[in-house]
Length: 428
Image (cartoon, rainbow, N blue to C red; front, side):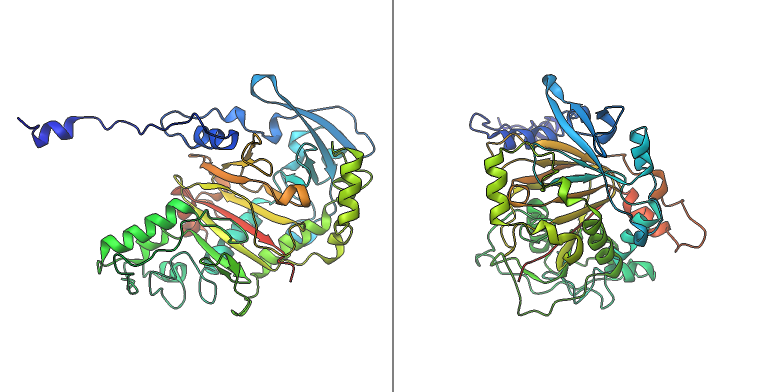
């Protein structure tokens, strides 16, 4: 006799099982940090607060060590960066708390010699600037900038966020014509947060499945806002061909995003990253080879100009699969990334998935730069957004005198969101 419906429902659903025997080190790390069956140990991710710094400086720099799991030690260096007055404050808040001594009076970056070209900027953005950038990213998710929903819905003329702000959350958003069953689908690829080269895989597929399942079912502005996953800015990107669409007019980058990305690149002491004063562990031969191939870094402080990027809107269960950026003509100049909202785990490895990745915790206000020949063409991804990690200064009830009404933006972030701003040069 067959089981009754009630007995079927009473059975607990078993978690999926995977054959992990052939997993690469990067894939193993992704599985660990993505797992919902057990909570990952956040101490296994590099956090600037956990770096043990020496008491004195060496030529204006300070050496530190981060001790990971299994007794691993990672060498880190703290270097001063230039003044960042144009981005909101004469001296940005929060970065001095991790160290003591003269260097705490300066803005600083953390360089990891084992990963050339990677620059961490802890607590880079003061709270007021984080709020301004969050507002800008949501309000600029409107034509002519394309979003993850543009191909599926006839979005409001002023954008989803404008409709939500003006009290139109229950307004129905019409579906565009759905691709008929059996028609060829776009190849599934990994979402890439800046170049827009890849796609936030599971969310793109979920959105397509939702559209197909709903048919002509009504969808409201409120419902779609939680499904927004990305907005392209600057040069447009063609998701099908995985190339920039230079036939489509370039849109201006939002002014605050543009200024922040440009100014932080121009403030980094690049000589400490790539030049004779660098702390890189590369051999002299490799360093000389790269210097011969390109010394473009010498011009970044004066010439860096952001050209394209993306606003990524993560929710708590979203992730970014490991990938390498391939689309830019210039694969050396810096990629700039800012984090706002909930914290996340970022993985960065090497040119293949066989290189064990370093897990880095990125908190709200942190900046990260990937640059150089060995810093850009590496696998990287974001396997986890950390629940209950929203800073109090981004909560909906927080309101600073003289600032815009923050309540709706705070409610959006409090529901589990993380905004990632990724910008770079294309090199045309």
